[in-house]
Image (cartoon, rainbow, N blue to C red; front, side, top):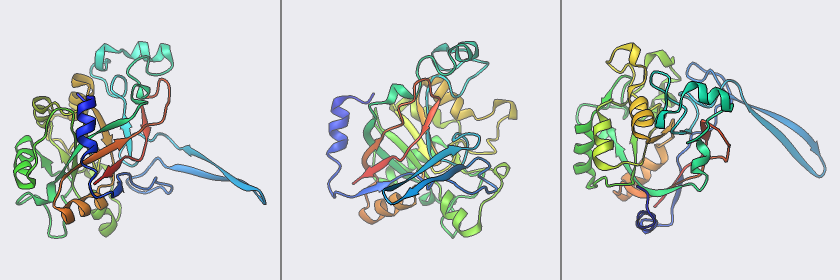
Length: 276
């Protein structure tokens, strides 16, 4: 879906020369929404330089850290991921035997469309965020296309702004069980119809509670990753990019992301960029 022509189209959007980080600061202190953190240990400090060491307690996956999921192995349905990769194959290989995060070692360079969900009538609070459990449906994205004067096409990344980090800054962290605003599972139809290459938002993407039986788990992750092969950027920080988009009244931009080269990895922390 992301062809050389698509990349050229995306690069042409870098008109202002403004670059904006799309990642949140890595969590280094435990909180209600951050059970797994990055431990940063200072190493040698001497007249010639300084070193340190980074280590995640638990995992970078989850609802705290900005990261990209690999397609084939991270999420499974009935024991199988995308392309039929099985639990047994993953265990035998000691990681993801195919479709790992290393499949994206050359990076993601394409056009991004930012959907500012706080613009939707009746969705946002007066403070400018969506409350946990607020679902964004396929028809909401179609409404936002008209409001923002954009049209999603094959190869695009779609990013959903819900104001998650703005709410956290104002009210403090909340327990993950409370839920998050995000995409409803019916957004899978939009992804398929438009040929979306990646999805992302400022939370864990799936609205929670999802309104579906608990046995289904995280339905959009299952549909996007395990069924359609569409990878997911979780827990981005879209506060600065939404400010820039509003200022310019432009919700499309060049998107660039480069995961770590980890053979057999199921994902990677990363710092994607928006370039206007």
